[in-house]
Amino acid sequence: MIGPALILLVLAVLVADWRLFFVGGALGWLLAAQFIRRGRTGPKYRAAIRHLRAGELDKALAVMDGLLRAEPDDAEHLRFRAELRRLAGHLEQAARDYERLIALLPESADGYIGLAELWVQRGDYQRARDCAQQGAAHDPHGWTPAYTLALIADRLGEAQEAIAHAQAALDAGIPDRRFRLLVHLWLARGHARLGQWDEARAAVSQVRADTRAFAEWDAILASEQAGQIRAMLGPDVQVARALREGALSVQALAESGDDGR
View (cartoon, rainbow, N blue to C red):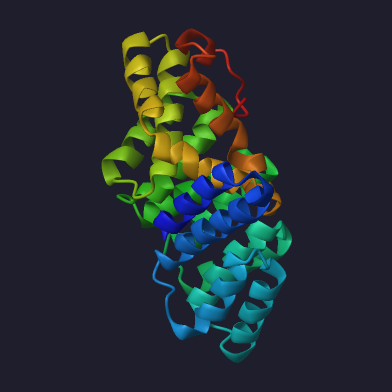
């Protein structure tokens, strides 16, 4: 799924007149890969995924609405629709889906982590942390709760907490390079804020090393469809790029804002 997105991104660079078409296609492939990787490959989801790849979020949501009318207590349907709703900026509706998901699967971390990310989108980090901590209690060795807690701690300027959670996420094994890039950034910023310069430089070297992660973020953030993702994580990607290009020093990283800028 990632391969076609990178091919489309290369075509966007080479064929300027078709750039928006190719970048939009790359975004669709990456978003679809996000869901398909989680196991949603059955026929019930194929129509929604086709619409998602085409950037037709309203049509993808309509498919999921139909599935949930037929099977209102299906946790996978709820999880998928909640993520689509978040992507579309329908945060109140997404929150209701996550709350229903928690009621259906109280021992799962998924609903709690979804709510935590939603509260991050809204800028309510204390509430986000409460949800993420509940998710971590249900999945203490998973990378997703640790990643979410690292994000929240970074935003709050809590350097030691950001380092601990970022390292836990890396130790758990993050499957996607673009998320590993962000975790290395938060790790670097945490060490820089504490004046731990050797550790900060080591983390920055990891940020600079993965050019493919930057290519993936370029494909996602260039699209109009990525407004929610761009608002939440775009500033982090900009800081990472500045580090990679030498426009931002490790010392200056320590002084960057607590909102990702």
